[in-house]
Image 1 (cartoon, rainbow, N blue to C red):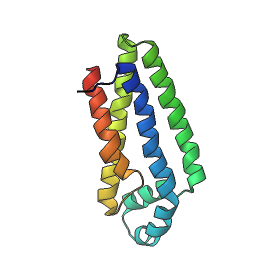
Image 2: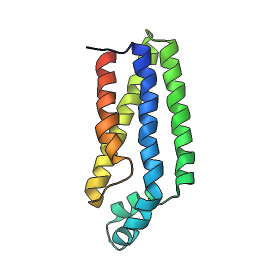
Image 3: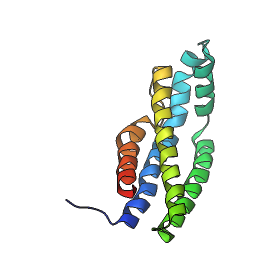
Image 4: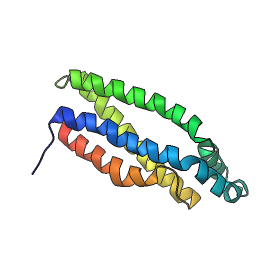
Length: 139
């Protein structure tokens, strides 16, 4: 079976997560417009909070994602430069666990709102499996 070298597998995660961010950026405006009346007419405060988070234009959402991309790139760079280091492993594994929690949030938001939320598909079918693959490789 083909297996990526560890440093390549770690860098590939940045690309995979950015595909997830692209899904969010592309879908966010249309999703907010499509779901606004359904959610704002709902008395559920949690649903309204979720909608408020997603109710931004693609440009504003992309600015948020720049911060995520830079943080992820720095953590990845640190890990690559210190592959055998315990502290870099703890940092990187913590980041991967955070990503898994982020993906669970996508599923929970979708379940609570009873509608697709931006980023769901790549979170479930791309980022989560790859994150689990990396966790397996690193532990």
